[in-house]
Image 1 (tube, rainbow, N blue to C red):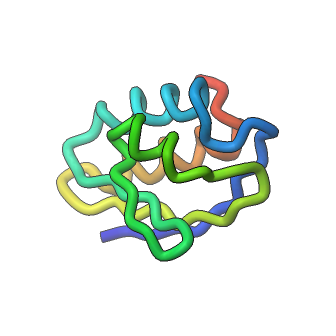
Image 2: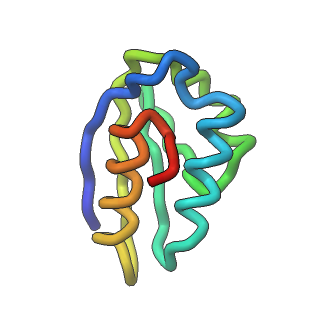
Image 3: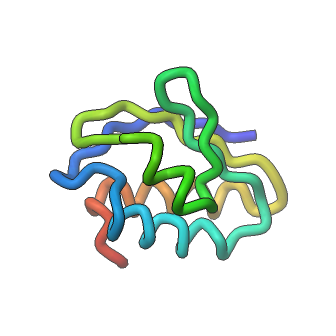
Length: 88
């Protein structure tokens, strides 16, 4: 399992469009992807779970990837967050 803590920097936080982009990307990987935020574990492949978690700009989250292609999933997750959810 890989973990990495990162800060959400885009103004919208993880709401509608950015959550959709994130879920779409994470769905490509054959591993579990979890967002840890304020003591909660959020399925990063569920748009509803992400949107209801109220992750706003400036929030610090921890991404956990566990499974077959965890390294690739983690790299993609970090890249998306750093790019403020612009597809690369």
